[in-house]
Image (tube, rainbow, N blue to C red; front, side, top):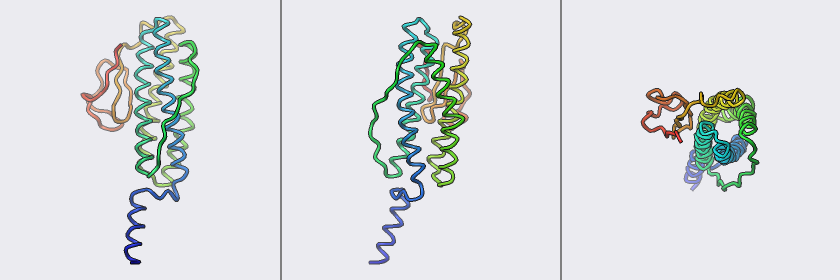
Length: 204
């Protein structure tokens, strides 16, 4: 009987349902899930606003990044569920402003995620040895670095009244959310190795 109990305890720990020692990572995963879910909804709304202003290329950018953030949210949710956590849907709250202001807020948000939020989350998940969380955080963080550059490029073009020079096509990796603003991306995703044939294309 004692042996059976010990085996059951070992199986529970192996499955990740016992969260002793990884509470901070779980809390961080929840925060990241909420943040990415909200960002996805906000960027989708920002895309609609850009179209209203006749800024089609910026609208395409927002649409692509919205999808990428949704992928990040889904990845974080998957990790939480594998850790035995229940993940309830959230109701995103945000305000849509002008495209210029939306880009400025996007830059601010992506900068925070790259320099502060995900940097801290990765450090904690590594300390608590939650490998799956570290991977999900890293994929998101590295993608946000690309988003930050793209938003800054779009804002600069908007301020210079040269939005016609912006890319007209974007690609999003369906596994990690990595985002590309080139006509033809490299053969596989540098973050997760997904073949470019599986990328999601955004050009309208």
